[in-house]
Image (cartoon, rainbow, N blue to C red; front, side, top):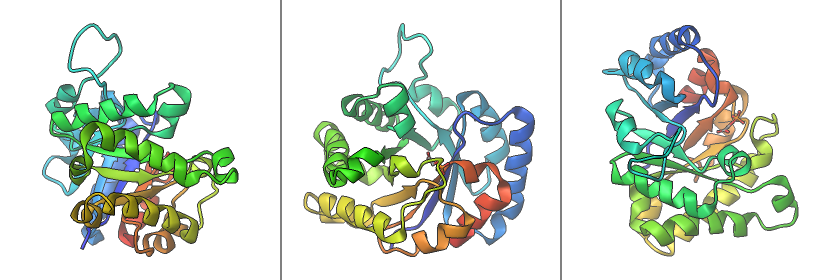
Length: 248
Ligand code: PGA
């Protein structure tokens, strides 16, 4: 039985003061939560997350990582640096990274490998754009994104990762994929992995992301292949995020 995992992706939001209030709110409400919970915060706030969450049931992580180990890479942050702040997770291949910062499937696979080499659990984001969905190539796109990682790291590497299916057209738009639409792609991802390794597929946590909120979480999370959520906007409001965690 896969344990559900709800992760907040704070994106470029927050401040020391706001984070203090948000994390305090989350900690206060965790008593009734049975799912795994994590927050992926901006790099400068990792120390704050570590200080606040150590010893709690909330894990923390980052939203990006360099594919490089160390060196002259101005502005980059390595996986070992994330380890210095006891991160559990790091998001790789978020659609905003792919679209705005030009991250290719190959680069995302390299980041996935760098994260795992340092003992971090990558949350690998995959998903199609609206144009791709309307052209009927959702599965082709998601398969290509998955294949880049499988080709570089092997299917067994997925055992120490989380996959997040995030249709780009549903991110931050208020347009959620219907539970049936999301379930269909989740089932496709799991079947694809199952064809290579049945045990890895059964245990793989596949989160849904894209305008998940308290009001639609239970229905999405009730689907057989949806094992949690990667939450953007709703992760910035303690009560909203906690409601999703409780639904999970
Ligand atoms: P959203 O973002 O919940 O605000 O749609 C999800 C994500 O981008 O991870």
